[in-house]
Length: 304
Figure 1 (cartoon, rainbow, N blue to C red):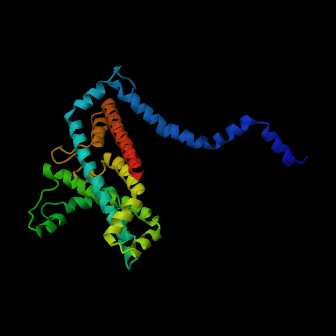
Figure 2 (cartoon, rainbow, N blue to C red):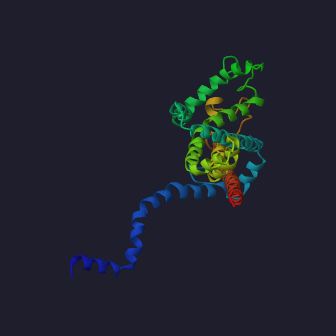
Figure 3 (cartoon, helix red, strand yellow):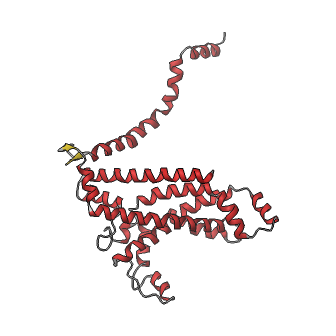
């Protein structure tokens, strides 16, 4: 019997070794998940129930639901929920519709299309702070290009960043622009997976471009649209980075533009109310989880 066969039979006689060998390869990955994902999540859950928690010493007064009671009744958190809800409800559908239209144009093989593809994808490789500062100048009341364009249509100067009634809409416009590149990439990949024979058959039957778009393109993009809605809902619910460059680190011109994540930041890093910040984070997690599950149910019914 050769040495190779002896080794083979010896390996078969050790079922425990065979069971543990895959775990040995997975151990570094599982350890990283446990340390950097599982432990922080468990820690936040526990922290949210600790009243008067001090992070440096680890001490707390008692365990209870006082943090949740405070957050739910805090007018700043209510304002944050309202602003975040409006932001998500406007940015996600609008960016999805625009991305479908733009991706449909980028999918066509015409001269100079590489330039437009690069232009639309540039925000993905641009610093959020740098882009936010550029938009801050564009929103300027007296010198901004946005007001200059609106003046061509007889619209007066809008104080986008100093007027509370316009600050949320400035954030929404910037948010739609910043989320478009990634959304367009997903839509473009979905379009390129559609079999060209569907379009050929439709054109042979005399179908117009609009009919082909709504009867073939959009239905065939349904799985991609569902994925985009889920990802963008989660992403926009955590809006935070866009606020800093536009409003100099403040939540709006008169502190009217709190978002849920900015509220968490304010409670954690500024007021050092760690339990309240953890409670707000858990509430945001539960809301996003419920919305995501609802989207999955709707998507399954739509696909069937």
